[in-house]
Image 1 (cartoon, rainbow, N blue to C red):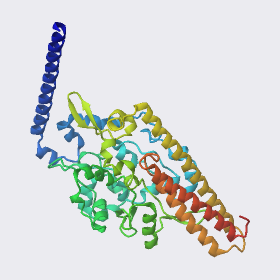
Image 2: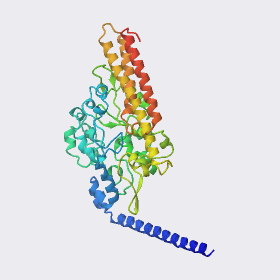
Image 3: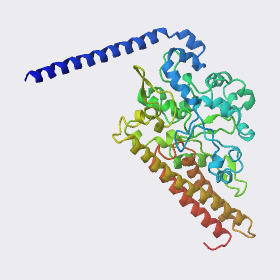
Image 4: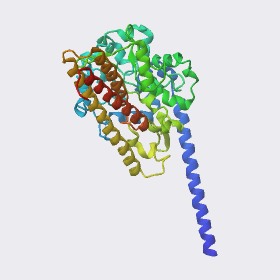
Length: 427
């Protein structure tokens, strides 16, 4: 009994010590945070808000994590941080994107810190779009849009490129006055307005995805002004966006071999994430890509924008009770299977182009049937491109990816059948 009492006494002392240490750390941490807040010079940040390094003076831990973007290590199998050529990784892209700058030069996107540098080296054909190409690349862009209006988008690329210096940074997502999350790009605001929605009424949790949706979405350029526009008026699913373009009779490029009137998707990450298991559970983009991490005695939201696999112990295991190795293997399984389906869809599209070309070269081919094959090619390639250009290699919404890849493959086979029928070939 005496020993038992001694053990209890010692345990009590240890518990009090631990609680005291935790309380002290809590006080120190809060004191440091409040002191940091008092150090913020609103005037300095407001005057130099496009310079993220100025923000970094007051948020050194966040700034340190942001600069991890300069690391060029292969953290994951898909979406590595090195500037790898997609044309080498997926040779069929040269045929699918023939007639566009993407068939000449198309790289895996690197971290935000390289945005200005990398956009400067895109092919001349892609630069012909003008200033619109810079919409999501630099912190100076919102001011340039305010200054030049719609003329910013159609201005010559070299002219606008000279005016930007700082890559995507703090002011793109944070209000320089209050540090609150904000929408700085007009395209998202206008897209919501056309749907009868007010983005300023979004909750903080919704904003933790919407700040990403300013750029990680598909878009196109209006023919008259080149303004960057989100085609969401009929909905945010691949088939709904296709219906939007069809109604407007919009074509981005004509394929040089098949003469099909095609569209070009661009990383519809936000659209595909909607309706996913994680989104339905209330998870925001930032929960996984900007997890709360412990730095010294502080907890901050990581600003190292990377694959959650690279921060799996913060991004995933806080909710999922399985081991990190199990979760990594699960991610790999989903992505590898998605890549297999992606390749099947692409090879089907290659066959579509070849079959339409054969029909075009066949004397007396049924032109009405040929046009039907081209229409089906347009639909099939759009569905495929919608999935292929999205980041995450299917992980953001595996079922959504499989659905539209399946539709693409089905439409592709119908296009092949239509092309063969038009020239009288056996099916």
